[in-house]
Amino acid sequence: MEQKIIFIDVDGTLVGNDGVLAKSTLWACEQLKKKGHKLYLSTGRSKAELHANIMAIGFDGFICAGGSYLEDHGEVLMHLVMEQADIRAIVDALDSYQMDYFVECSGGLYASENCIPHLVKLMQIEKVKDHPFTACLINSRDYYDKDVSKICFLEGSQPYQRIADQFKDRFEIIPCTVPVFGKESGEIAIKGVSKSKTILKLLEHLNADLSQTIAIGDGGNDIDMIKLCNLGIAMGNAKESLKQVADFVTDDLAHDGFAKAFIKAGLLSGEE
Image (cartoon, rainbow, N blue to C red):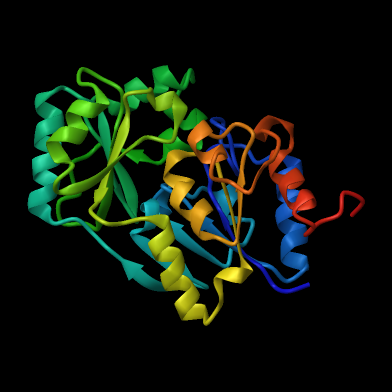
């Protein structure tokens, strides 16, 4: 079988809100690697949000922060970052609205003053260290001189559209892909960044063709990569807008949808 280059979303595709990898998902990743296929994460998460259980899979590389970061076998091929003046404009506005948010850098996630207790409540956990995501948050503003790639805001005093309208001319604004953050949550990223553009950059580096590509995801920020890749798969729990552009829809995350996707695609056998 021709070697495939597989682009995998994280939240809602690889793991659920609890951050746990299903046994069937681990099995599928292991078998795909054994068969010689290349696995790349393609996620809205920054590199700092890729926790130990995810990294242990042994991916060939990473597209992070919605496309602003690209790494192949340990080599960073692209890393776009925000200007300090832009960072200040965003956080000053969110602070003025008393919105909770976190600033994403490759080396850590920096939370606003009330963001961590807000997340603990939303995620229904007792302590910060009870979940790998909250455990990696840093309650600090020590990010202005760092490599900020994206800022995420939780649902709060202002609707998503108000934030989007304020910043859409200067930044890429998309609804947040993590349901627990709230329907009015969102992500503010570098203008023009997308998963599909970064996939094309990687393919050029690999001297590979689009005909080799497969993408699987569940969120609105996966639409462009699902449409770009030769085979685009939507999770059963995916947004309806993504399902409409996918080549097929697999089962949901809670019912082994990830593994079933690659069995249906003919890359794996359920008997292995």
